[in-house]
Length: 371
Image (spheres, rainbow, N blue to C red):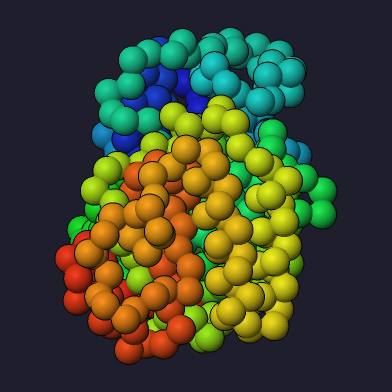
């Protein structure tokens, strides 16, 4: 009889594990599975086990391709199963191609004359997933805010970051969920960051991989009205509840989709963007709506210089859209602009609500999650 041995954490058993067990079992006549005990998992992975050891042992033992299950309790990282391996003296130790402990395991095999067999990567029968991904998905929120950016946008993109500069943004409600998305898509509101968070993914790395910045996922996860330091990775300087913005914000749908990656290489005045970010930072520190509006106007001027079309409220913008007698404090395209939503600031809630009676406008509020 050829006895095969495999080891791992198997903290949350998923279909990828089953495929590995089947392929390992096919190497012989008997398969022993060793999993890291709760104490070992904490010692080496610094995380709690998802199940008590006896539950995990029963679960693995119930799999038809598994003949025996042992619990690894040794403290040597990578070979916590050493004592059982020496006791059972299997013929084969099967591992995956990405095993990190090859030298240790080969030496252990040599002690009992076992073969060290690397199972080649085979086409997955299921969408690949890891225990970490499963845990993140379980912990993912049911709903998340989107965001509006007031100033400093683009300075969260690592190649455009500036020492001493700031990015100022605000999480907004209504919130979104995987089943309810009450906004237009490709809208410049950080939707990809929210989607990543709702699916339990690392939104920051996902955005950076697209060649854009980190501001969307971090404000969506953090919530509130925030000031971030420009740089390759997010550093939070100030978090405000944003109450001075309540009843003062609206979105306007420009009618065209937004595409940040497609405009990353446009020429723009980053020094002016940094000045707007500094103004917005001071506004948040002071809870000063008028000063924040000044920062938004600075940001809007940069966008217009970049070639974006005028918005309602501008002298050369579309006429007859805003109600008579209402003049917003400031407005700008959200995100990279050239489409999507624009954010508007108002001196009073009544003015905001009058404008939101016009097609294309909708009210939004600052969103602060209780943590």
